[in-house]
Image (tube, rainbow, N blue to C red; front, side):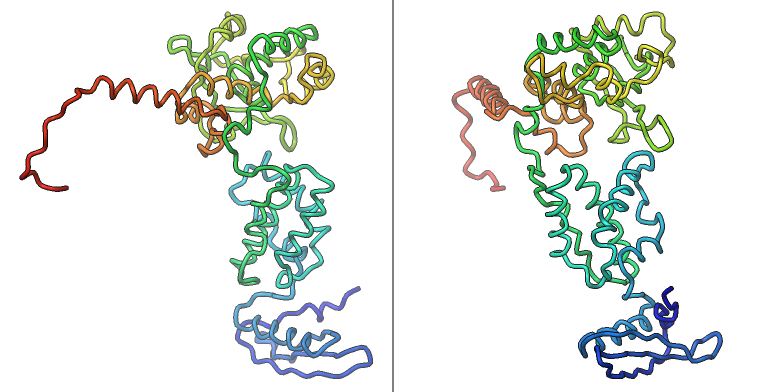
Length: 396
C-alpha cells in the first residue's frame, strides 16, 4: 500500500525546507514544513534519478505553497478528484453519457497515469493516432471531448497553464471536419421513387416501419424526432409539422427531451407525405403519439434496423451504404435542390451553423446560377438611362 505521506502537499503560504540525499539508484529528495493546524513538522519524500528531477520536484512543491494546486497529480487522479464537474452544461441522457464512456474506456487507460503538467499535445496526438486505427471518428470525438473538458478544469484550478488538448478536436480524423458544399449529399436517396421502394420493403414487415421511413425522409428529421412526434404537431391549417422533442434511448431507458438544437422548428408538409400524415392523425387526440411500432412501443433507429434487417434490405435496392440517418440527409438534399434559400433550409433542419447546411448544396453551384438569373432580370427592367449626378452633389 502506498505511503500517504508521499502524496501530501504543502498548504498555501508555508515555508519549505529542502534536502537531497544521493542513493545508489538516484536521489532521495525531501521537503518539510510546519503544519498550520497541528504545528507539527511534516513533509513529503520522493525518489528520482537525476538532479533535474530533484529541482522539478522542489519547484512543484513551491508552486503548491503559492497557488494551492497539486501539480504532481496524474490525469486519472485529477479526474477522480473533480467528479462530474467537467460535465456541466452537457445533456445527461446522451452527450454526457457518451463522453463519460470515452473518458473511462479510452482516455484514462491511455493517458491517466501521466502527470497533468507533463501531458503534451504530442502525447495526445500519438494517442489519437492509435485510436484512429481502432475506432470510428464519432468514437474518437467522444473521447477527445471529455479530455478537453477535464483539462479545462485543470487550467481553472491552476494545475496547468494551458490545455494541451484544446485544438485536438480539430484534427481531421480521416474525414473533412468542416462540411463543404455537397459533402452530405452522398448519404441521400436519389429520388422519390427509390424512397417509396424502400418504404414498401419496410412495410412488408409492418406498416409502422414504412411510415417511419417516409416521415424521417420527407420531414428531414432524425429517427428520435420522428419517435417524439404527436398528432397535434401536425398543423393542417399552415401545412407544417412542428418538431420540438425527441424520444431517445438514454441512460436508464427511453427518455423524452428537446431536439438536438434545443429549439422547436417547423417543416413544411410535402405532397408525398400528406397521405401518410392524414392516416396517422385520423381520429387521434393532439397528445397521442403520431407513430408507434407493431406492439405500441417507441420506434428507435435500432428497432427499425433489427426488425427490417436494414443492411440486407438497402443492399437489395442498390443503396448498401444507406443508414437510418441517411433518411434525414435525403430530405435535406431534396429541399436544397428545390432551391429553398440557405437561411430557410437552416431553420428547417435546425442547424446551429450555416456551414453544416451548406453541406447539402449541389456542388455545381446551381444556386448561384439562379441568383445570377434573378439579378439579370432585375437589371434588364432598370431604365437604361439614369439621371446624371449634379456636379455640386456632396461626395459620400
